[in-house]
Length: 573
Image 1 (cartoon, helix red, strand yellow):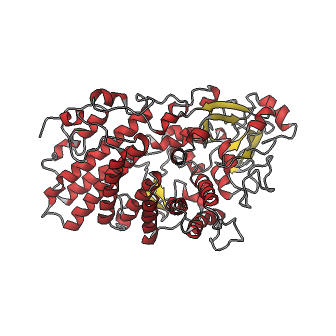
Image 2: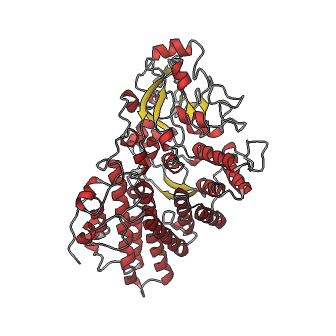
Image 3: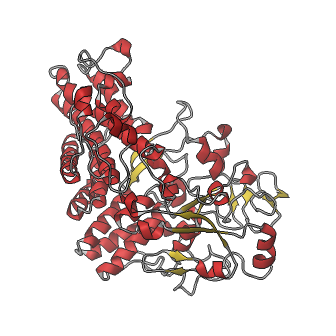
């Protein structure tokens, strides 16, 4: 083999996978490996290492207008590089996505270069399947790269270090077409199912779903429609009946989850402790400091299908009443039981019920008792329950990359953007919405069904449906970017309760203005305006989000540009 050396970033990814521990060195190298089905299976397992898929995009929700974080609100201007306007090529988010993507691409290329060694030892159908998995992995990572960086280096073979150093950026239009070709090769080669013996490796439905998402992101709506419809027509996916239960760590191997990477306490693959501690309420031993935003709470429709500023059902003093059921299944409703404790962030609620003991105790989830709890009075509920307190707060919640509800809404949006078959688009939206209400989509008297309207009305319908359905699932930033709304939605303040909890008690609660003293206005893009509450001194501002136009494309990692002089940066960096 040619001599390889380890460098950071892109050049690491381009050299042989042997250097990155694709296989134990005691078991051979790429010259002696890939000759049996066992070896191919071991190599393909590497495609599904969690880090390749979750770093750093599992944090994307906190870069959107759906969330806020206590530490940031205490120190306005420290919103994190993506949302404080300081994104540059030396930061973790930029480097991690680039590096992890190219590492997985390198593994896929190594498989494709060497799979011929198993010919004669492994049936052709099996060889094609493993090649399909490699094409799938490569396609998914180029999909991420082109969406966030635009033009990127493209390679489809293992490169020497000299070749790697000469890499430049290939136009996004060319890489996109090559990515579609890889998806299509995967779709043609992968089985519909492996049965119960294999719940991780990519299938035909997984490849179709991920192609549909990528095509939607790249505004190729005809391709998104086709891939989504083919995925639907496979006929093995369906919506899980209980929206709340779907996201709990106990819910495994259900037909809605199309592409899932499991976590396991037994195998020491668990949810990051930062997420666990910051997501749990303080009454239960967590920090309660990573929170849904007021913007998100305001976005949920009322049960009549109208936004809060148009619906007579909305009560700003009881903001969870008469809302789409996903509101209280995503954000903890005031007065409800959560993780064994009553949740009430009001400064008037100095004590709450501990349902595990049946006794009243001090309320650690109100700032008048504990100054460090949620600054806006909200906590996440989606996917979080009392089981997070077990096993030393180790949580083995699956990492779901795409699910059937997404495919349905991709299909709907693709139709809407082409202004075709809007009745079918409405039907797909209604399937998702009806599940939230616990009814069949035909029971239109039991939920606010969407009817085929104008293209613009349908566009608004599918966009708000995505926000209500996918909150806390790391899709909001990408949605805002592709809808060209990021600069509007992500430039402005996070609104929170008054910083002095005693003042919150006297000026808001005691004057009958809890939780919101008036109804926030919702604009044509579904974005809430809290300026009237702020001007009336009924709330204050936390951290300011800043999203300059240059961040529609991320910078190329600085170190990679230093190593590869033909790499140029995106404008504005």
